Amino acid sequence: MTLTLIFRIGDRAYGLDIDAVQEIMESPPRYPVPKPAPFLEGAINAHGEVLPVIDLPALMDVSGAARDARLVVLAPEFRGLALLVSRVERIVPLDLERSVPDPDSDPYCQALIERDDSPPVRLLDVTTVYTQLEQLFNDNGGTLCP
Image 1 (cartoon, helix red, strand yellow):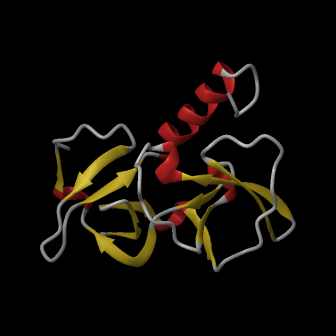
Image 2 (tube, one colour):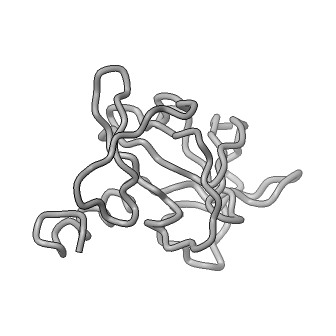
Image 3 (cartoon, rainbow, N blue to C red):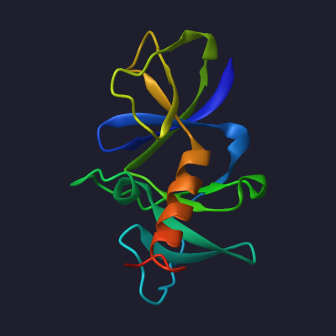
């Protein structure tokens, strides 16, 4: 069993290994950035470190999704990002042995884990998030906005 933070992007449950999460910040002040991309929601000061706030529903092109006031702050070894999600839920133990193929082939999902009492959880592939951000940066001449 692996402790996993469960959160929502639209109507889908996603998860992050608890070791990837530094903290959940309750409504931290956000500071604007010049010429932001649609998925860049500004920056926050997390204990003296300036972190970009990435709107995951916007990055994943999930239209109409709600946004939680809380932010999921990734641990420094995951290159420090603050993630805006639809809803932060709870921390649960997940049995990674219950991985099944993802019928939707979600590119942001590294594994789909079945659960007895709830819908399956898609483990967020943080590497894909970074790859997508880097690709958008490179495609726009070194900026995050078109």
